[in-house]
Image (cartoon, rainbow, N blue to C red; front, side, top):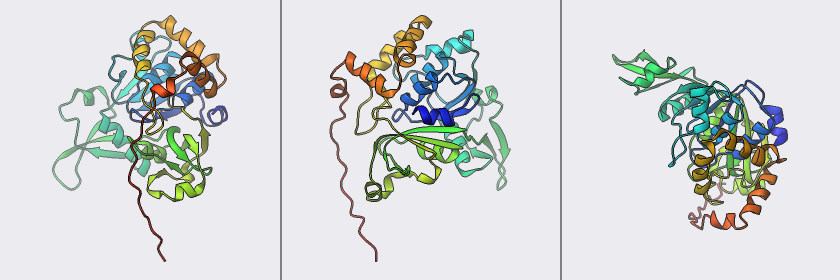
Amino acid sequence: MRQAIAEYVHDGDSIAIEGFTAFICFSAAHEIIRQRRRNLTLCRMTPDLIYDQMVAAGCASKLVFSYLGNPGVGSLHCIRRAVEKNVPNPLELEEYSHFGMVSRYLAGAARLPFFPLRSYYSADLAQANPRIRFIQNPYGDEQLAAVPALNPDVAILHAQRCDQEGNTQLWGLIGMQKEVAFAARHVIVVVEEIVAEEVIRSDPNRTLIPHMIVDAVVHQPRGAHPSYVQGYYDRDNQFYVEWDRISRDRSAVENWLDEWVYSLDDGRAYLDRLEAGEADIWERLAPGEAYSQPVNYGIYG
């Protein structure tokens, strides 16, 4: 992780650490904080705790997003301090609806300049965001909304597994992982397991991110904690509730960053500290079993 972030994430870059509720790569965010990257534009459909922590650490100057909050809990207090009080830095906001962000990624993946959508009519959001515009339908009389393509400098995506070439498989709530990968200029894939090519080839329909668009592969088991990875570990809801308490106080946040990010060498050290505090944490977050049915792909020829 240290090598991948050092090589591909630079001050001033636009970064998308995506994953809709699941597959949120906190270990990558912590390494970016640890390497003290600055003036980043953070892009994400749901900038929950991961970007709250990065904003608190002074990494970001701008947020491009849809929906902002601690899911099921409340506000993101570090982001609120940045917006309302410029603490630790001023933070520019560029807000869209969920489908607006989806459309931006779709345009970016297709290398189109914009994406049309039926949305934003009589909406305050279009007034607040001048990048949301209205165009004439070239095939009819109506007007359509349009949003610009989003092509992040770097996409960091967590998944269940890939092979050594970077052919990456996901299942569960996959969100926009594939589209973000194709939209980005560089792609870092972080996985629970690196498996043999034969495993990937045995179930090709799960391969959403092909190796030819992957720049780096990082093997970081449990690197999405406190988020979840389908079939590997569940969401740590206790952490999301606890972050609400911590994030209300700037000093408490700085102490947390010192203890859980800056003082640790890497993601493995984070897990060691986590397990030292709660020996049975992975039993508590065990996902149980829910196997899919096998498929016979057969052989042609």
